[in-house]
Image 1 (cartoon, rainbow, N blue to C red):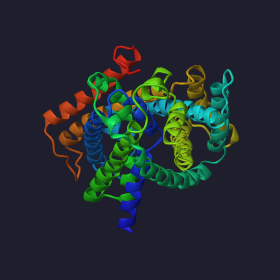
Image 2: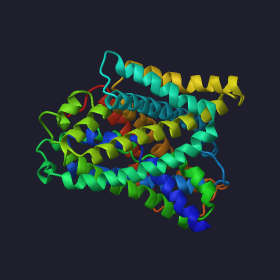
Image 3: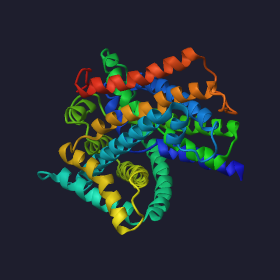
Length: 406
């Protein structure tokens, strides 16, 4: 039974990590080229895996079932709880906005709708239909999400296996200007390794078993890293860097997910691969949207004390969907932009707070964890500074202060 829980928890980490954000990786790293992109991904995976273990250390110092915000309050006081709550809310809203824009782009591309305001209308339809499921039945969405998660991973692996044969190794060669674009790509790549919000649930499910939990977090985050590298290999090796329908053309047009999938389909000339790409993309956006909005819906309902009846759920739904929908209507090509802002909130939740909390856990006399991550105060300081750097890079990117590939 414990083995099943360990395997199940590992799959939850993998499924949570590999979401719609994976579609942004080739667009965000287009200027880097394959080799620099791999180096950046490995560095950020090490950072995120380490902070996941820090979060585990903190979590094991508290009773099973403790939430992130309750741990923040116990270690950092009310300010810690407020920061954790605000960061969680910003992360949820930013990701929801990203998935609405991504979903609207997929609708317009799949149905070949290109009239004026098509993406805005698609965003509205996408939100009303899927948001309606969240409003109507949380349990049904949960079960549907589990099934779709499985299909998503199978489609992703099958897609990668077939795309390998279309790779042109010359397209993977590093370019002289590649290093210029590392800073701008870092926040997007960083966001693709976010799963830390699910750690308290994993601990509650598996139980107080540090060795097994450590294995779950390391393997669960390493599998996405490997699949991301293969995805980068297949996409950057298939779509040319410059020219018509190239990576440069895509970024110049605003890094649309729909246009990226269309360009990939043009270069592979395979109905099967095109179908798999569309299946993965559609399900990835759908499951990511449902998973995040379920969390946001429950978070808002709990915070505002809404009743679990039709009136209360409608109020929670309006607070859940209207803010990100407004963003999507004003920035219909804002998929990458929204993921970038999610990086700021994720850096707070997954890097800054775990470092601060673990330092408190190690010195407070009434707290003791059965698991301690190796690393001196110097290492924790470096990790904390890395989190601040991610935030600074995203702010700089928002003000167009970093070189952008196009």
